[in-house]
Length: 588
Ligand code: ADP
Ligand code: MG
View 1: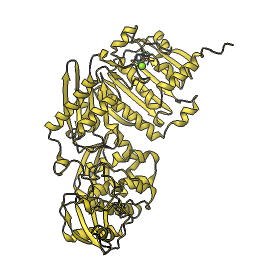
View 2 (view 1 turned 180 degrees about the horizontal axis):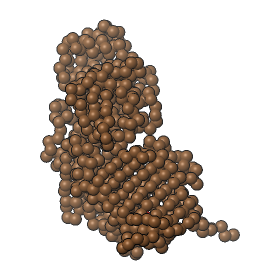
View 3 (view 1 turned 90 degrees about the horizontal axis):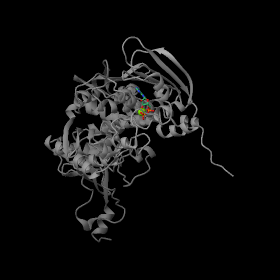
View 4 (view 1 turned 180 degrees about the vertical axis):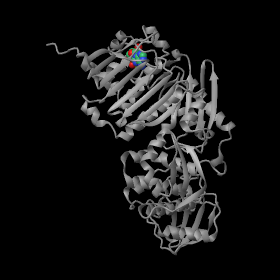
């Protein structure tokens, strides 16, 4: 019995759509790529409800004839390649002829377009719903192409259900437009969400100028330029100085022949270049372009063309790593770390090995990063409650006496139960964290006015975040004022953080908040803000303390609700109990 059937085209398209279109941002990506391939000088993107209700991309590119406008919705219909040989030398972003039919099969799509020419010409409007062409008609259309995608996934409820919140989908679209905007300074880009303009980049002369439009010209001071070439492979771009760190890799923009990609070889090379200057688990901001002959890279390995394959991976890897390392070195850009004695935090080990007790003194693994530079990450201890102590501590207020300070970083203290070694930074961080949190939940955190407000530009993503978090930030002592566009002024900061660079503090907090903001868990948001403020404001390591200050800190710590771990989950103190001391001296 014959069982195999050829699927109806509409169904086949719907299946193909699953590969190409994951979420609204994937639609935006395909449409922007088409506009770029059409030679547009201006691309306008609009969305409603994070693109779930509406996505509209309009360009002033080459447009389409009425016949082409219809043909574009056929599977494998493309004007970009004609033969198998062309696959080896692709210079356009698209080539599979899959995007339009796929998107049209899972949405209600309108395409309006006109071919350029002299005098008034009729444009074409094509309407496709759920993969079925419903109407083709003449329409007045001045220039270029517009694609309007309504009700994405309306006929694929399983997909629709998996879409995330409006904010999350909006975040993805914003990142996507930013990504392409950075790659093509010669094209002007705009993006508005429900009438609110989030991105507006007029045509720029260079990648640097475009990056300044996107990140703010202030921010450019945190970036160093790099470039290197070998044979016909070249890399260039901008990389952040080590003190600019992010908790996600979202601020890394990679392009191969101006196509945005994600690639393990590239990520790895970047991580290697920073290995010596920033802790693992945090990410630099990187804008990286690789140019090489199309035949040196296979772009046809991923349905969304996001992944690629280099023919000569080693060359690419070496060039990237070398170029960034050199640039960082040249810029001597290790301000935060230069003052530290060691790059890697030293493991918490007591050097006199025989004294090391085997029993109840449990050493936490050395932290992978220091909290005073790492963006806040709320550790499991915060999330899961207070009962989990890796070093059970008990001390009563007033019972702890400081004996001295080790390396200007650790307080050695004693009480009736034995010795305690306290990391001054994390201890103070814990104390401040609880204070900020309590104040946020109560009257609000005491604010300190800045003499001169700090004015700077937010990135589009930060702007979206800030909009939603304005109230919580005010509760935590920030006084912010919005100007036009993405410009914001910080007028006041939490009083305890007054000596900290306000811009850094705010952007770090915003950065850390991406995840919490998505879940809209207000207590998680507050903990994250409190951790950010505490981390910045706390006493640093390599900082001498007077006896009084040490005593004050120990007393404060003893009063803390969770005196054992900092908000990032790192241990605050090590205890060496009298019993352990006696046992090691062989006293019964
Ligand atoms: P691909 O980009 O892989 O060729 P698509 O399905 O995305 O496939 O588009 C099909 C064809 O429709 C393109 O090859 C191009 O000729 C035409 N097209 C799509 N979008 C535009 C646009 N914005 N301007 C002009 N032509 C377009
Ligand atoms: Mg395309």
